[in-house]
Image (cartoon, rainbow, N blue to C red):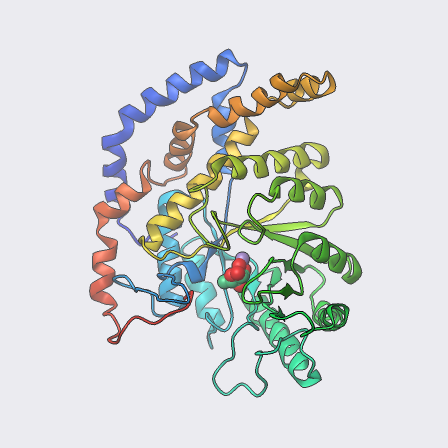
Length: 431
Ligand code: LRH
Ligand code: MN
């Protein structure tokens, strides 16, 4: 596997941190063994963790007001891939990349696949885009895409999704994520039932085009860009549609797509119970779809989501799998640093959830010992598993301190030289 950053530099950087890591690791091993937990089991568990990177997160993001590009912005999908390779080289937790079409369209998927495989990377779910109009596009999506009144517009949107499946197949992907912004801004603008009937009709055509070993993920979102009624606004609508479509249709939970204070871990438990939990777009938010770094605002919620995944895995065994992806917008940080620290925060929640004493928890629940039940969860969340995450990275050939090693390597400065900034004022929009 070829690496982008000099692996000797990473080894030297690890060398400076080795002794402290081992001291912290041994101390934590002591704490956990008093709880009857073998730290080595958790470190192996951590090494098995993987979360896919959003290609669109490799560049600086923005809002409708403005986007302030950083230095050395990736200018095409191949440079986004290089940046993702750096993130995986240092965290060893992000082997998958989720592409977005047409933002990542390429005429040479073979070369893209070869570049990815040369860095030990693969392509996770691909994302279609019928929430923007492309140059020369015949029918506008201003009034909707898969739910548009115009049959020609719907057909165009369906065909785009089928094209995404074809491109995804050439790249080795096994799933399509369909998020549409379709909806209404005014009561009366839409017949609410009619728009969902048209959605299902369009999705049936997309479903029919799925290869046997593929899945389609329906991504719900409460609002934005529609501000009165979004066609796929919540997990209930997404679930009902996935049921209607068939076994290859599952629901994708983007953590930022809910009203404030929504109990997202309960949505996860419900979708898992009914066999329709397909995957996640991890991020964090305080108000709306803020697309902030995972675990940066509400790490306890992230832990509770993984606690539900651990419960489902205990019930269903190794066959229980979800497609885990990040979906974030990095407006004021170096995207590579944010994606590295976010992948580590999601991995942290995954390991903390494995620390939950599930037998004790069930005992307290069955005995209605409310406080002990709550404390059993909190004990796992309060446990600082950083030494386990760092040891897992080091044993997998990564960096004990990914951001430290990245900065020491001067990758961003080199990219700024190799990728001269495009002149012109700052634009707006998420990418
Ligand atoms: C919609 C969304 C969706 C992507 C887009 C970049 O808000 O979460 O997953 O297609 O962001
Ligand atoms: Mn998303």
